[in-house]
Length: 153
Image (cartoon, rainbow, N blue to C red):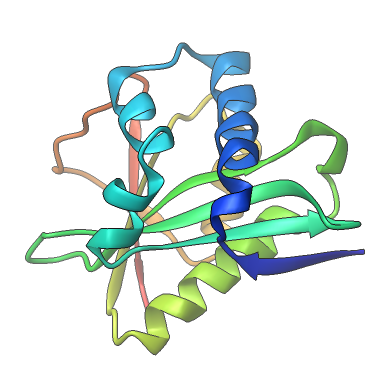
């Protein structure tokens, strides 16, 4: 069984590793990845964001972040959602997403944004299950981004 906990500094290396694993499986690491993964406190938390970690037997196996956006339409970006290959298939990604969306609701957020790539079909299916629909028009810092999605809370 897994549980989801708020981020603590002791999870920083696991957060980075879990995200590097999936990115390097399908793509290449980009400057924006390093900026976020190497500076969680400054890039996400100090700006009003949140990070959640999924644990199995107290070992980190998944992550998800809410990054505060300075956008007229979207309040937060759902980002850095990843589940270790050995833990996939247990609905961890869905529960991480739900936890992040619930946190956004508690903070009064109305709309959440995310970026992905259509090669990640299971992830796109998960995002749709969480209530996201395809949108267009926001500039992305990631070359791999070929789909943008939004969710009304």
